Length: 358
Image (cartoon, rainbow, N blue to C red; front, side, top):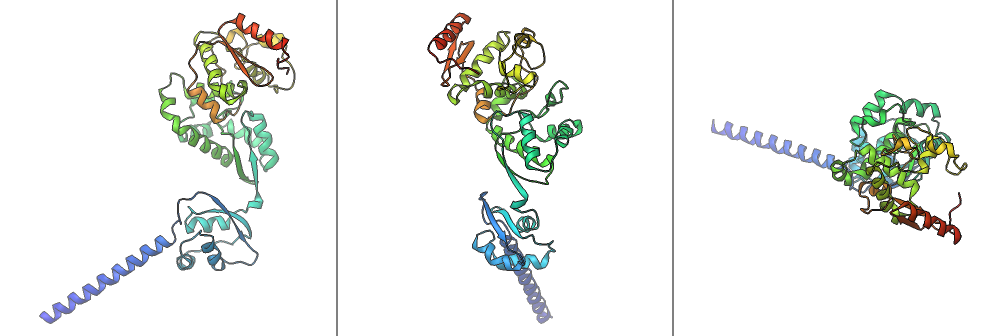
């Protein structure tokens, strides 16, 4: 009886050891197919014609994209793969084997375009850049940003988007919320992917300022609208906070902002297209802050894609008592407290040949 018990205990012990070994090996396997590190740097990885997933093991290991050739090959045996696509692929060291395989099955670098959206461009220019570099049409874009259900989905996903973007008076619902930067998009990708990549980028840029934004007496929509005006009005980076301070002072005193760039946007004119006519300056629309009817009001939405410096200036404007500013043709900004002081500065700039001619 004792001998039987000893044999049973021995069998149990062996089984437990085997289970432990299996779990250990499985743990090593999971570790082996995990990401190499947290490095987000993109690496161009080329797959030549006739390559197989197995034959890529050495190359992936050499470029430090996988931890273990053995675990990589074991993964291939345990999982079904789609066809490997020859060409250049963009991989990262923070991808696990599953993500690497998926990327190697997908589109290559040759199927994509690099698009640079400069700070200060408006949505019309953004549309032109997207349609000229992808297979997406203008109608695709306009239909998407007019889709209330889609906008509701975005509002739920991104904390900085609010129901303000659904105002029917707004020309383009996402104007000012897509972060200007250089992106790589697949030519046959969807407009959803493009918009959300740019919104993801904006989310990352705004996150460090989230508490300040939420504590502000201005809504995020008002802040982004102010940032877009500052982007086009400030001549240089050093003056952005000062320019924002001028506009906030005018706003809080119940004055019209008096910003020509808002008039141009409201009329759907490019800034370089022509001078504004006198009647256009007073013409009311939901953007024209030169109109006396817009006293104490911001435009109904942003008027361009502001960069981070302008956004920060709108969040943390310079505290001063200036109500006017003007820049000379060299980009130097002059601030004044009174209209008479402002007029004198303009006269001085004209007499000295420093007046900026549009």
